[in-house]
Image (cartoon, rainbow, N blue to C red; front, side, top):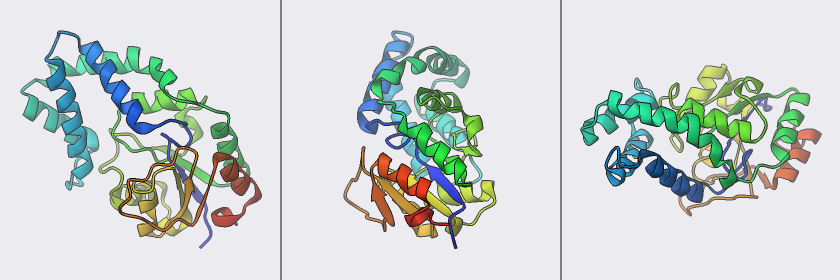
Amino acid sequence: MTVSTILFDLDGTLLEMKTDPFVKDYLKEVGRHVGDQFDTQKMLTMIWEATKAMIVNQEPEKTNEQVFIEYFTTHSGWKREEVWPLFDSFYRDVFPTLSHLTYPSPWAKKIVEAAKQQGFRIAVATNPVFPRDAIYHRLAWIGMTADEFELVTVYEDMHSTKPNPSYFAEICEKLGVEPTECAMVGNHMQEDMVASKLGMKTFLVTNWLEDRGEPQYPVDQRGSLEELHQAISAGTGVFAR
């Protein structure tokens, strides 16, 4: 079956960046924003642990947001109404200023425009461990909005995360497509190429390649962002119609 839909990873793919250093500095900024209102180290530990709870969650009826909130409030002893206004102000006022930790380039818009010109349906398949505001801000850093895609995965709406294959299955359900109609484009061997387990075609972007070694997954095509743009524009490789 030929590909009709392209799923684009965001961090390290459309938005050029190294994920681990970004997360480290992001958490540092959270700590600075918290200041002396709460135990900063405890706060950062709870955020990290609640994020891991989302990743390992096996309760498909709960959104990632619900899992995060339940874990955070249960294990920290802090009430949601005490802490969440602080999170909300962080994502509203501070997070948008962190674009200097990334390396936005013109390739994202060129690639998305080429995909649209070729008639592909497009979605942003970013790991939904961040709130909607944080993900939409990152799209803004590449000069794009959520309205330009059929779907952008956020933690308020999704019920699993990468590298769980059910994350990709839920995307397909939301879009009304079969996995074999999709191509997953990403820079992470374990988090993105796992989509191949559902029968998706895969394109591994090499500019900001991340590979933890194991497990390894089939890669149908690989190349730089420029080569990705060329393949989509020409309709070659996994993008052949």
